[in-house]
Image (cartoon, rainbow, N blue to C red; front, side, top):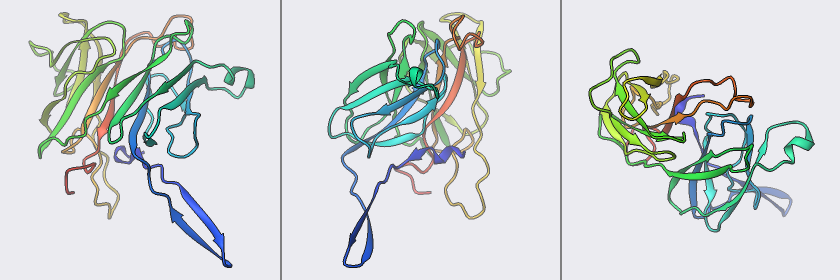
Length: 270
């Protein structure tokens, strides 16, 4: 899937019947927020996430794996939204279990990530709301930040390549648990994120940023990527999996790049 196609606009259609012919109209969107889910539950399998209070203008993702992100969904923000999280399964006895049940208020006009964290096994799973800024970087620039989805603080570095030595100073220093750093801008081109414990030179995770794929013939909208100006990224730092759980094979922390802003999202004429 192309990175600049990750925003779903949740348009609903109403068909009116009368006078012997059909008329198709598009409903007017309510005041809305744009919502994405990221799964940082490291002691269970994939989960199904859904808003259960209404059908239209709801953010629903089935399934969502550990360290995965959904698309962005345009979501009704006129009232608090009731969200539930279930284990992904075809067994009704499993899918009827509730991992998390909470009501969240969204502010119209905002873009946010709902970070699912805590422990499914201990019954402490919950969402943390992360604000995603879509102000465009300057021409020729991208913007990157780090979001720490682990339980301890981290330092993070941006280098030109994954094999480059660490700079003397962390790009993002001492990012706290379940916190997001500020964005930093840099020229388009190769970039990798690397993470360490605060003050340490031992790298615990490395991941190079994704390049924009080639656009199909006739497509006037550039794809998101580290080589595509105006793109903004969040690099999420995930913990290792819990031993003996469905994520037990994930034995080291990891970094994942997620697109917060596509090149032609808002504020830029492409």
